[in-house]
Amino acid sequence: MSPNSHRLSLALCILFPLVALAQTGTSVVQTLNVEVKPITKIAVSGNPGALYITDTSAGSDVLTVSDNHSKYSMMTNLENMKIVASINSPMPDGTRLMMKLESSKGLSNGFVDVSSAMSPVEVVSGLGKGSDLDQTITYTFAANASVGQINADARVVTLTLTN
Image (cartoon, rainbow, N blue to C red; front, side):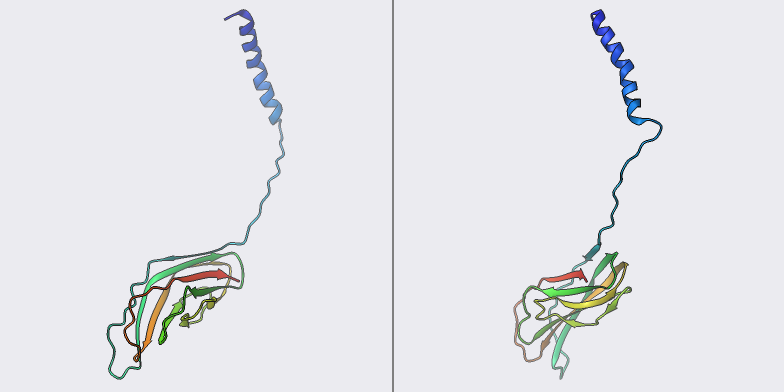
């Protein structure tokens, strides 16, 4: 190395800490922006079993089968929220799909018929700030006794936490 490169290295070593100290000082100011945005989260766990009607009680006009293996959890930092449900296509004639969402934070509307709920229908109301965890969802499929055989079919149920 030449003597000039040693001097340059020595000069950089001396100046670098001074430059770093010049940026810190004894007191510094920073601007920090904060915000809490609206939070509306809903999740489901578990899947309902197949709702197949395979038997009837003598003299029964309506045949039903239920499942309560699904759960939902919700969280919000807003007041006066509700959960609405919809399905992707109407149920076959003579059949109904009902659902009930339990709630420890709001008011469950009990069993709600969502058979033709292409537009959302309210299933839980009066939800306030906080969370409602692991609440049971019960689905009931019903068919009039006069309905003939219906091949296996599926419906997509959408739950939405909204105001």
